[in-house]
Image (cartoon, rainbow, N blue to C red):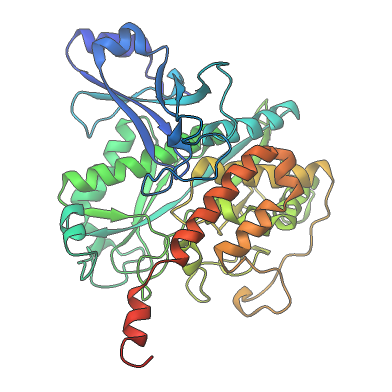
Length: 455
């Protein structure tokens, strides 16, 4: 799905002085935009064809450390270049940055010009291609939650991220008066994203003080992942421009609700026929949808890492907080990990409620599609829907409680290794191991306060 802004439009804007900068960005393992700011005249002359970046960008952690143990890149191999190939269908103006356009790039091997298999965009494109070969495509939508603070990023950093002042003093779920106070930022986010070719549906207050949600229109899987990555970056840039800060941490504070990224998904034919809908089926679910959802559940533990990639991600899974703890499906039930929405309509879909706002959309979408495809290929039978409060459910499938458990499930998954490739799974296993190693050797404030005097 194109943003409808073309290279010819860009050339015209450059010639007439409206655009002077083009951001050429790849998406890293954390889902962040990484790249270069091009002088627009140079970009339209030649860089629109390709540019280059250091290959460590897809083998690093949140701190940009050169992590050891990766097969693809290392000091021994010299950290050479990858080629960044702009996908011109993603080209768009960025209204909140003066005179700026942005394009997302695929990451290619510098020598073969084949896509780098462990790059997030390539991982998702592989699953999209599998669906196309089956005569299908996926539509997806990710809801993004975050917390808004009255301090700037610089002030929050200087304060050691302590005593932060939220944009609200109380729960603002659907609260119009409180969100009116936050409109300077939220309106700028809505109108900015809309102007960048991302169709916005709404914003709303969420379930804790200072918590917000932004919702945009669904799209095919790759286009939605592209939108998601741009949305996160855009929200931060817009908040920063207003002297505010936003966090997409899954669980920023023990006393606050977690922030999620619920992912709605459905399959359609290439001719736009809804394949999840069957008016004769129970709840309007087709046999294909039964197989797909059964695949999601069968592989729920294996794909959790791609929905919850950090130590902090697992702090969000707490009973009674609208974050799920059980990987079961239920009909319009927000206590379940997977919720049936839009029953008896063409808009019928399954909502994955497991993912946090810290996920990488390309990896999360790809993992969900891989699990669902496996369910279809193996004609998996769907268990009966759970009824009631899933938090209190006994002897039902649980979401892995720690990164360590999720990493083991991922690395041992025959389905993921078949779908993504051994090298890709080994690459992300190393990323998960490093996250765990870094955490295991750190001393937390909780440990010190608990044991300084009493230990």
